[in-house]
Image (cartoon, rainbow, N blue to C red; front, side, top):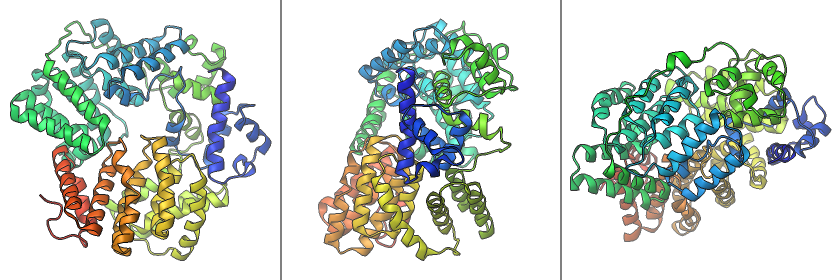
Length: 598
């Protein structure tokens, strides 16, 4: 992709968000000219990172929205986890060829990419292991757990089984030393991947040494059950461990049942991953690399200096390795904070350095302005959701809303009003009562046509969906979720879809409560597409359970009851105990005691 095409793609990305949110060029441009914004959206001119940061704020974009931006051929592959887990060799080969066609110069990143693709293609093969040179290169490059990112995650998924005992131990110790603000469940996912890698090699020494260590991470925070449901691979890992320790027919059948139940719930990709992992484990045997040396202290990068400098040094990239149509002195001055890069150059830099665009923006712009955190709708909403468990007083809830609105004072009134709606509805669920609910009904019907015509949903649209559902008619809900279906299928792994699944779960209860059985059944049948969505999210499982329950209550046939019981069986065999607990709480007034038991 040439520079002009990249600029057109970037401009179109912003254009789609702006138009989808009903904002004019003038409203989005702020204090710079609408003509300049129009030319940027059409790929005619570039803009500075500072202007881009302001634009992102004014059109209500969130950091996670950049996960919807297409990954270019020359970008370090950070979105191939599904290809890795399903061992999609054709897909991996195409992505590999595209990457090396665009990145012909050998750098530390092309070396890492070559290791990633090689392991991704061959990991299910029982006799395949990384060679000593590749392992040493990984050990020397992945030295700073603080730099955990999608880049590290893709590598960990691919190298788990092919890694030696010594490399897994090294990564285990480094992961345990992480000093960052990522949620604990993120740490658990990394540890679980390393654990799974050791299991696939039947490395009993690793398992014996670190079993207590792993258990304590979960038990320490009293989250073992919840973590099992949030990270769906973990229940499979526990079953696989039972088989490795005692490879009996009984333990094998338990794994086969879990895989079959996972597939029955429409999680085809995950079922294939489990099948491949079990096949690899059957052939597995411990692999050692005694020559591996931990050079962490000698190559670790000091934590002073700019994020860009630290990231580049961590990855082993020289200034001449980075191709941005800029000379080395410009890049050096950029690292020192003495000059800016254009926004398209920033995006290309992030792709080459395997880091998300928002990470660079926050570090280079928002922190530069003296803010410890950029206040967005997403950050404010998460603060309110967290407050539910902390029992904040209403004054503190209002303070979060007021601070958020103050930070958004320079954005279009229509967007600001919609953001206030989301925050107030979230606060109402916690107990805030001083809200104009009549105004909410009116606003919900203004927001509905807006998100129905938008073909580019980000976090904002999914949060709107989450909170307008109780204010709409069932005919309006049908239209809303048909559009939601299209958006969710367009970006199947986007995290915002969780809010749509949660909203569906509530809507199914409302349908049973409010509609006659025949009308409720007709309405519910529109959601049967949920069964064929190949996503292993807990929120999707709960939506499916809610749909099956609702259909059973409206039709009351032997077949619908059997469908619910099959769902309960699948939940129990796959470790989704909290899904059943949530369904009991959600439906307790409508179903008899013991309904979600077998």
